[in-house]
Image (cartoon, rainbow, N blue to C red; front, side, top):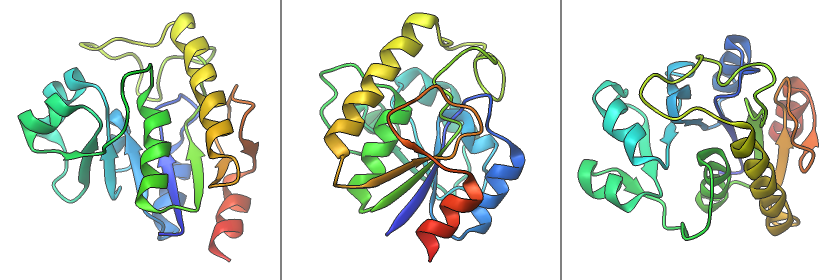
Length: 183
């Protein structure tokens, strides 16, 4: 796979962007509950066991299910992405590592707001799960900064989120990013 689109759950994610991602023909990885915005995604990725406990019954069968959580893998037979989880991480950051592990040379990001200025998620607050806090968001930015340093020269990561406070990835509109990676 030369390119992939990852759709996370930031409030800037739009149905139009999700449609463009699917229509591009590129594999689409939906992070956590974003599979609901992209029901035709090729992969669902989540690292939180509690998320799997709540969502496993309603997930579409056609998407491959992936996690870095060994307990979720054992409990539900989900595909295990073998990665070091001894340090802090978030599912969006791990989805980028997962896409690279699958062989992606270019990764387009959508819904990677890394901010709660405009709300918690495109779908609103979780009811039974934790929601982002200012401390979480600050930690995530550090995790993404480290990831960008580690991936530099190994994979092209393009942030096409309509809004994002991440500064570590090149920002390009979705249309331009899709042209860049599919030509």
